[in-house]
Image 1 (cartoon, one colour):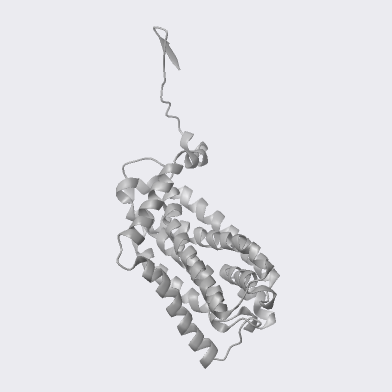
Image 2: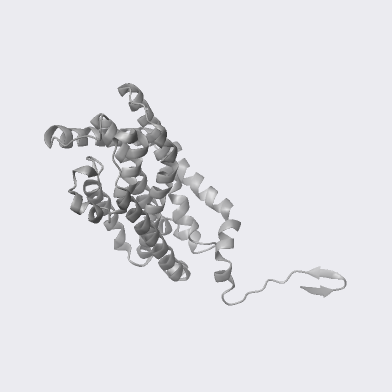
Length: 281
């Protein structure tokens, strides 16, 4: 601060590394931008789209019908306990669609907001995180749809449902790690956007969405849980289907560990390349 004629005058100090030290404080200061970007994406999805809500309902229902026919009727795989097979499948689809939607929406968010990034300073991490908010709206719609299905089948969840928010948070973190990494890579290597549809499609069939992970032989369960979504999906079914749905706790712990590693690495790589985004986006 300087003093001239008894009037205080603020001076803007530009010091090397100052923004680095205050980065996470800046995230909080720019929280309004986060909400503005998130609301804009929700607006585009639901108010400026012809089939926004219809697609959010039709996609899980159609996928559930296909998986029920393939895995229950054709492959004759068992359900979890006494839960009807469609209920078991939908319980697995809830976290998977949350994961895949956040991954898809966030991975191309920096390129999609190129004009904003090249003109204004703000913590760029806000962009992929805000892009994933619309997926939470889809998730809420799917939860309501799932509750309706449970009412139709007369299936009532048990007390474990109180842990559902924890596994929902785990699903969000599991998606944010690779999403933040890929969105940073996509700025420099634009062909990374072609990888996402393949990852989502491949992951849908190797994750226990259309079947229960209990069909995996015991000696391979831990190795199978290297896919972090295995523990998340098992946790969702344990919460929604009750004690009838078995849960492999070593696999859940492994999924948590891998999720945190991916999240740490994704944020670290994002931060190391963030200063170049405005120049190459």
